[in-house]
Image 1: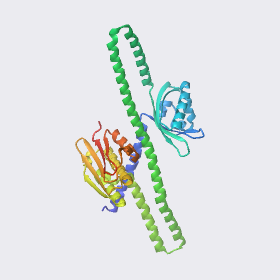
Image 2: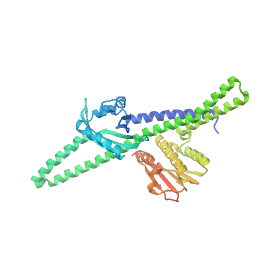
Image 3: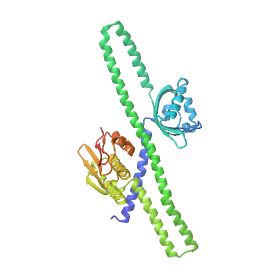
Image 4: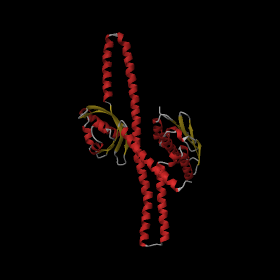
Length: 401
């Protein structure tokens, strides 16, 4: 067991690591080459922009504050010939509750006319309104290239009609056009994945802030409020002083324990001081004690071989998979395997619970775990059937490819 001084030092490091993580998230959002936004439409026809990042300055020449204060001004920038179509497509998305996708022109004072491509996922609100979370990017160069390719294709087709000798050249150009289209699709898929991760980053930060606020209000603040009440009683000498001091001490200790638990959940000191295996083992044993199942950790990984970002991602992944087991599996035995080679590190979680059919995989909140692993060029697989054990495997390369 560590001495009090050591525990204090660990928690101060944890708070510092948490601040560094928050600053890293903010910097990441600024460096994303996309305009990330949220757009809300209420049943009474009013609309708002709850969130937009600083990339809007480059794309629309307005600040995030101007956009959020006056959403109508954004629509005024849309080209008159595209405005009605844009509004109609948004209304159709809200009516059918389907994702929205569109390309349209904007007329800007300094950059003149530009083409934008935008896409957004849809969420229906409890008040009957609709919230879109999505991204937008400048595709002016791509549209110009498409037009040039189309013109070249038309000219070449006319030449082919006049001269059969150009047929082979025409086929080669056609092949090049198809290859460029495929490359453009791959680029678009990469942007979509990046946008999904960016949106998930914004939503995850909001969920985490709300969770911390609730825990501080419902636990720590209540303990401190009771402590204040005891102090007021002590100042008025209403009850016997020894009993009141003992109760006040217990409340202060409980508040300190709650704060330590919240800090440990956000950034466990074991992960940075002793390594991934010890942090996963500590969290698994804690869950096993609380929910009465048998937990085993097999294998280990040298902490020095893991980059900091992989150590954090693998711990968060193991944590989410173990919590998922507690919520859904009803398992009595849970095994976590940690393995590594010179090229990759592998995390496997096995439980003997109730299992589930492949069609319900996304229903258990595993989609964002899969997105996170795929973004790191890793592999994510699940083997499960109803009434049988479940095996979840994550493999991530040690060096980015």
